[in-house]
Every structure is written in structure tokens, then in C-alpha cells.
Length: 228
Image (cartoon, rainbow, N blue to C red; front, side, top):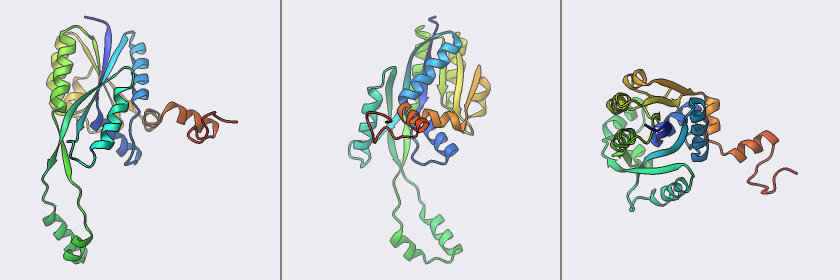
């Protein structure tokens, strides 16, 4: 088995967890920063970093979010050391009206008036991502492509795949933002657990030049030549 490490990144999981930790609803992880962190982690383990796999759910072409997401995916695809793996996002029905009517009554608000101003957004559920993660983890280890897996995910459904790759001789390190909803079984199975502090998440969600500019007190977007 090759002494190499791969990164398995459940984008939805780390994004939601990072947003909750920092209280920032628009926070996004920077792919180059994650790849850099993985390189450093591999060096610490004394192995070679092979690549990272980024798992995400894709909107259908007719969705209003499709174009913006495609631009994001294009950037991910151009990031050295990272490979995009896509499931899909499926609309999920949610009957919010009974709960909303009850809440309106408890607050003394007219329900019909509330509904005239209420514009619910569609709720999407990620499909196929966990299956891709499971298949890729087991296949990569079975084929001898890696001996170490850096898993950035926490769903309980991944527990059996963690067991499987460990039985094949690989080690699994679990990494996630502090306070992330990681299944206890997955956490207990991991050979090592790395918890990202708020400062670490801040670093992984801000491009290097932006962090460099903050340090020197200037915004690199305002001046391509750097500080005067």
C-alpha cells in the first residue's frame, strides 16, 4: 500500500459547521487553503499528499441557483490537488403552514396578513454524496492508492466505510470545525481526531492574499500592486 494521504471533503458538512461556529451565514471554505492544510497534515504524518476529493450536491440546470453554483464548481475544478465529485440536490417537500399558523396565533399575528409577506424558499436535500464518499474511500484503499484518509465528514452512514478501510490497513483521521455534528460512532472509530478552532476555520475560509492584506492593513482587491 502506498504511503500517501487523500482528503475526503464533504463540502456541505464543513460549510454548515463552519458557518455555525463563526456565526457567518455566507462563509465558504477556500479550496486552495484546504489543499494547503492537507499538504501540511501529510508532512506531519510523514506521508505524501496525493489529492483531495470535494463532494457536493449539484442543482439541476433549471434551478435559479444553477449558474452561480456552476461558477463555483469551475473554480474548484481549476484548483491544483483537488477533484470534484458531485451528487445532486433534490427538492424536499415541507409542510410549514401548520407550524406557521400556530406560531402566528401564539404571537397575536394575523395569519393571512403574515402569508402575504411570507415568501418561503425551496428546501433541497443532498442525494448521492454519502454513497460517493463510501465508494471512493474503499476503492482508493483497496487499490493501494493511499494508506491514510483525512475525512472531513461526520455522517453516521460513513461508519462502516471507516471500518472497512481500517480493516484493509489504512488509518483514518477525522477533521472538522469545533462543535460540528459528528456522529459518535464515526468519532470513536477514527484513529485521530482534529478539531478546527474558530481561528483555524477563519484561516481556511479566507484566501492567503486577503489574510496577508489584513496583516499589513490593506485590501488586495483595491490595489493589485500591493501596499505602498
